[in-house]
Amino acid sequence: MTAFVVGLTGPMGAGKSTVAAMLRELGAKVLDADALVHDEQLRGTVGYSAIVQTFGTKVLGEDKEVDRSKLAAEVFGDPAKLRRLEQILHPRVIARVLEARSMLPADAVLVVEAIKLLDGELRKASDRIWVVLAPRKIMLERLGLRGMSEREAELRLAQQFSDDQFRAAADAVIVNDGDRERTRERVREAWAEVRRARPD
Image (cartoon, rainbow, N blue to C red; front, side, top):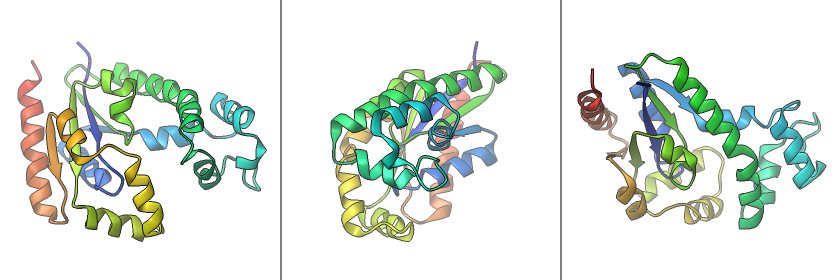
């Protein structure tokens, strides 16, 4: 038996990292797929070479590392380019997740926080899908605090699944509407269900 995997997803600005931090406190091992993606783009990696080969040196910064904002500008709004980028990075991220799971004890719970969880192989690697949702107004405020213009935030959110699509895929829905204690209570309830489902 291997570690139990909870896939944690939801739209940008919903507050997945907040929920992930609460899960860490409860004893989960948490992997941030976005951080893994970042690792796989660093100079010297296979991912870096494939990105430069595919998109050219225009996506690099002065330090010759991949400039994430330049890369985002290159692929967002062009589904074919975005798909090519995902084909480069997603298999590497999956391999890292499976490696992490294999190194954990059988009774452990591994939470994988990933924005693209539902449309890739990570979904198949998850025993449970948890979705974090928030009112649109709150998501736009949170994305604004990250320096994103309202127009850019709306554009990014429009390219993601709708709340209904997220709900349809979810084993548990955590509404993160700004009330931290209520969110914590929802996380605890969903966590208790996972612990019950986990056979000894």
